[in-house]
Length: 325
Image 1 (tube, rainbow, N blue to C red):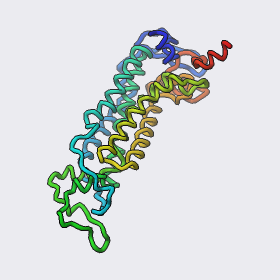
Image 2 (cartoon, rainbow, N blue to C red):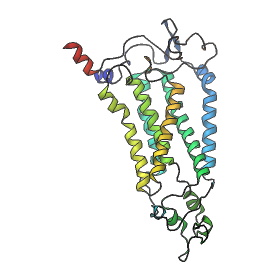
Image 3 (cartoon, rainbow, N blue to C red):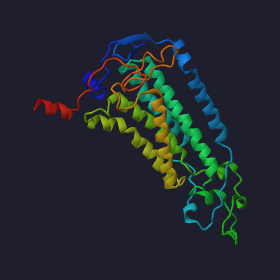
Image 4 (tube, rainbow, N blue to C red):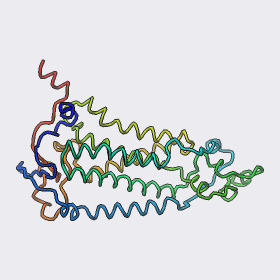
């Protein structure tokens, strides 16, 4: 097991510091240990958690607001799909994929492999930042666009003798007989897909986290580790595809939602971790405590991070075989 961990996480055994200590790197390469304290945590990241809380309140508040309801044609075949009473990925399963699954993977890695309390915090904070940002951005776009879902006509339940307007050839929501206004209003929130953006915001952050821990973007090839680190993206893709199976979204909604979620996950990850090509990408950024702003900056890259030792990343299997031959 220890050999497997060393192979998957090549920098996990670089230091034997206490689990509640962090290592920082100065410009000249000198390393120093500083204990994790709740005071430093609160003083560094209280604004981040307030921001996350505010985003969560906004996300909940605007989720049920009826936004723009675009006109549609009763003869449009792409809107005549059936309404699925039971979704393949219901909201509770979506929350598990978006938040639960990443936490199940990241917390043991940060606690028992990285053994870094700051890493535990940054992983959790970054994940919730990614989730709430994706939720707010997605819902805001939905309200402004008002694109009909593929099952809109089934939701609308127009009268049997209903027909499009003779002048412009379109209909609007006022002709619908649907009594449940939530179902009706939700029928105009197709673009972009919320399931797609939220799932990729969660599993995308997880994939970036694992990629950093495994040093996938170093100068060597990491084929086997790459499959493991990027496998969470397959889960996100399955969630996104399920939305077309449920007739909840058009393929454009799913594609844009997935890209949006991955972009937000990347922004959230880079807020708390260095870029994946950095020699210490397995470590989190420095906490933003007063007095640490200048002395702990990596002068070569300009990145403020928790560093332990300078060295060459672990070689890939192909490189090791080449050197032995």
